[in-house]
Length: 272
Image 1: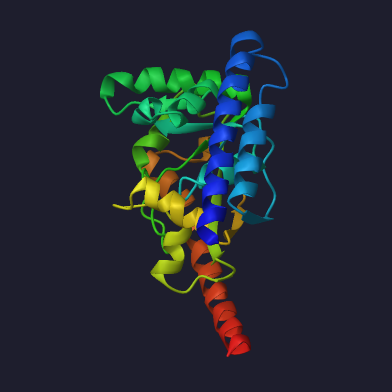
Image 2: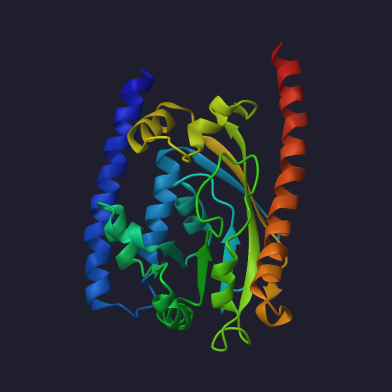
């Protein structure tokens, strides 16, 4: 029965991707600067969450979407619809995402800013971020540079924060740390790595088995915490800036995981 449900979920999700790809392509071509431009991406994110039964609890005050970059830890590809359903803004992504089938096209027409690794691309990246902030008001970045199992936050790549301290961005930019905490999968508190792997997409996990396992499950629950934002002009160097944001995200995750462990033990006592 779970396999039939999974097939249905994946089929509906593929229809969603096709619908949004066509619809947003039309909007992108004809109404690029229209105020309703974000309607299709927001619909995609909220509907994608619903299909895979991803629920969220939002905590903290969200900074106004004007010259803000939200930096979050990264657990899964599903983090994108999770954050995209909360924040109607574009993402900063590594350049190779542009070439992904379907998802790369969706990312491009949704005004994703692509980061190149070469030194020659730095000024172009700064220009692209500045133009995106003028256009959409805010961006979302996963500064770990990869995804993890959600039990820890690896150090943020300080090279990304060097872009934020450029003369063009420093005086106007705020960066708000965001912590994503996976608390439940398949209807129960997360306790084991197998529980985490239902939602998590990291390391050498393959895409198709990951989507299949998530579709077969009863979904997941996450806490999304928004911490007080930092003004870029408060920092003199990129490492100090990156470490401050990393500490905010990491400390919140540790506290949430400790709380979740206590909840898991209480859940186990009730079930026993």
